[in-house]
Length: 104
Image 1: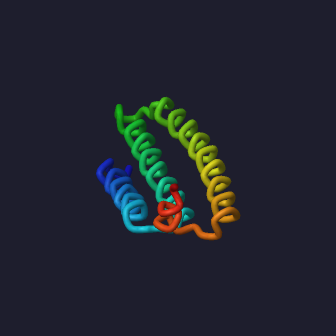
Image 2 (image 1 turned 90 degrees about the vertical axis):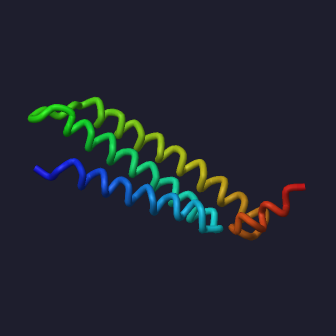
């Protein structure tokens, strides 16, 4: 069995990649992808802790939470991409800094 530390290291790596996408990218689609990566890091953590809670037993609660999180992430992504599509059609750009100047 793979140790818990490996799963947590993978989740931390995904978290760092997601935060880097949110902090450095200006494209709205890349920001949505960064949020998705952050949600995947949380799902990996839920499943890893549910598998290692008690030896020889896998708690189904972590899997249920991860499945509901995946469903929620899909809904959030669909709404976010719809907003991105409408913003591009209306303003002609996906750059967040240019859209911020159009506030007023």
